[in-house]
View 1 (cartoon, rainbow, N blue to C red):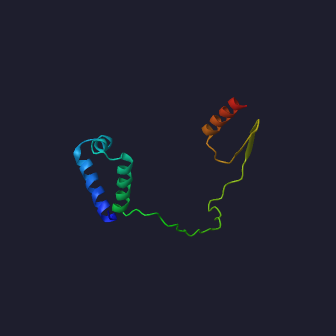
View 2: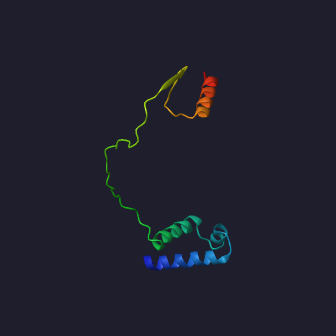
View 3: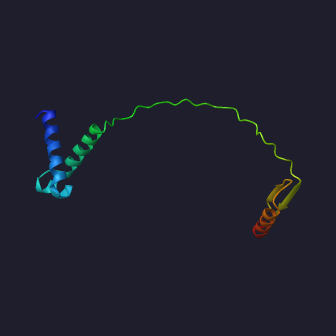
Length: 110
């Protein structure tokens, strides 16, 4: 049997199985066909029909840029708080409620 004839035979079998309303396992059993062979040909046809081939390795260019300096200057810390192993620098204009919450959380951790 030529390869083309074999492919035609398996395409016909897969179409029959799909339209039978039976599960693949039941259809294969009823037609004395190995379910492993069925799945082999089904995968093979899916790859052929979808044009899936083993992808070739492709290299993408890697561009490395020097880090840019921040455009916004961060003011120097005015207060440094230390609680146990934690150290927090507090700049001018820091939200008072956030600072209070932070102190409370640090207090529970230390």
